[in-house]
Image 1 (cartoon, helix red, strand yellow):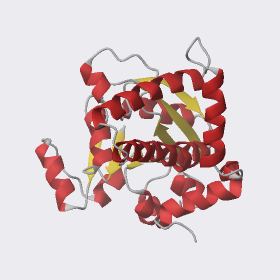
Image 2: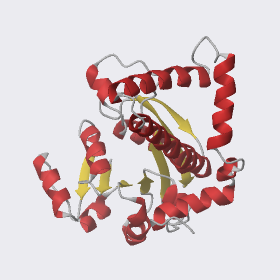
Image 3: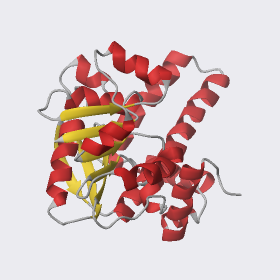
Length: 279
């Protein structure tokens, strides 16, 4: 396939390119920033003019920030040939209605799950690959937003190549992917993880030596994740369950699950694409 990567010199563009150069595909790297162009040149590759890339492309990967993806998509979609697959790497713009419509092309959305905290990674290189797609294996999620049903297999196969090494691919809808991210993984996940970081810093501020606090925190996080997600063969103690409930009542709002309601999920993706938290 002729694959155009828009934003090829960015963080995600470089990640995808590093995997796709190992395949038989012909890559057409499009980048507008001087910094990104320099990065592509450092990797021994060449930039292709956007118009030339789009004229040739069988698939176009939009490796772009969510806040500009919709605007760029409206420039690109009218230029591609019929049957082209447009691929986004995040559901936000797709779910927020930021993508233009065109009946004779395919829209495919995919995102990495990233290496699992429960996955056994054998080498130091694998353990250092927090994101995945370099050394550590991980799963991915995929959605055929529009286009012929047979295009799903083509999109998944391509996603497996640029996210490699991939363990398995889950076929879901764009709406389901938006529940996964931002709502589950970012709106809730990042908020809770950063709250744990604040907990650690407050512990140190109260006089506990940092190394002791970190060892205690990181070890207990592993145990608590194992028990909480049913991966350990023992339960929380009665005292731990009691004080955990005490903490939940003090830390979480009673209505927090409203974040998963469709209107809230939509509000979250619109916040991402507009780069503004609603009042």
